[in-house]
Length: 165
Image: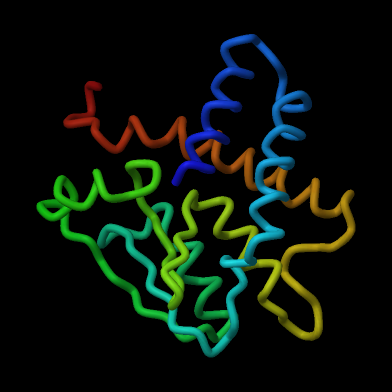
């Protein structure tokens, strides 16, 4: 937890100072690299029991569900009811879902990060879904970010009550 707070503090300071991601990311990498030397907690095996926590809607959880199924992971789809969320929210790493929990209680958060991680593990017809080549990986990330921009524009329309709005 302390490392997460240190990392978050560094990132927030960078944002406040107006630093770009190019300045902030090396700082994050240093903190995470030190932690990686201690133990690679996020490493997932196919036989390990995973638990995905997300609401009973597709939205941000569905790509993770698809990747877990494609990769034939041993996983449980734990659907969180909206009335349970206020009790669960303060116990989450960033106050949001989805969360992917490993058997050794490592918590993976942030939907796109989880998707990228799983796509690096899933092999279809002999190839990983997430490319090793940096240029191809950039194209995948670019498309994921573009789709997120589209999702952000569409989301407000879900709350429209009538055709006049």
